[in-house]
Length: 314
Image (cartoon, rainbow, N blue to C red; front, side):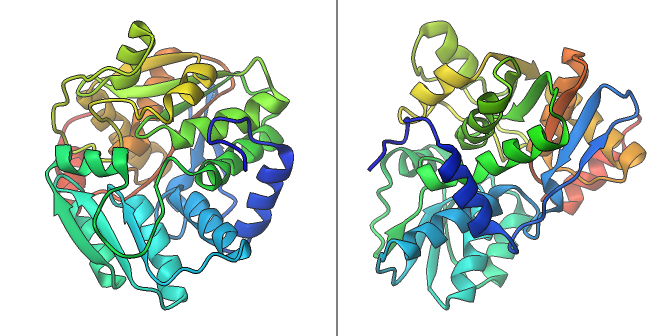
């Protein structure tokens, strides 16, 4: 059995693409008005985020292996939970999802409508579940980040990008647990080794920037904001070897810059993005790299927050 940090193979990525076919959208790569940045619109997925790729691949791979799954347990800020809850519902499996108390209400409400049992925690307690997988629930735990098949699901995004833009120069990716960046980077660097992988963090939580500076994961201060799909107090130890190897640099954006990117996406491109989804767009605008791709990772934003942001002057 291969370790989480072993490089993904072409066979694994191809298998993931086969498993998720029909369940996910092959999202478009849309140019922004500046002509330099392209948007990978994962907000167009059936559950509103890229997470459906990894969740579908992980669950199908487990079933293919003969695993006996009687119930599903996971921890999620909302998007992975929605993706695996949809799969659980199709299989008539009960599911328990542990969420942080700052998760967008639209995500939590969707989980409940999908039949999931939702348990809310203070962020620090929720992050401990992310680190330990310990919930006390009966069932098969699917980690939203630290699963090889979840990362392979994310890698399908990278495979699509290289096919659609073979000479891509940089990909900007919001960092939560690191599964998205790790998957995309491995697929792209197999075909385009010189492409720069730029992780995006907000100035409210910069654990990867701190880890790269310190040479390993360290605990940092995290300030709460409406941006719930990224940012933590520490890089997951299990993900550090991958992120250290695959990420070329970190671009920091402010909450105000993310809000401005949300307004730009809505006004210029008719795209609704959540905070994490717009963060890469804000970072791409700052980086100014030709033939760059910003991953619009999701579009699940509370209507009240969206209204507040769109009402602000551009």
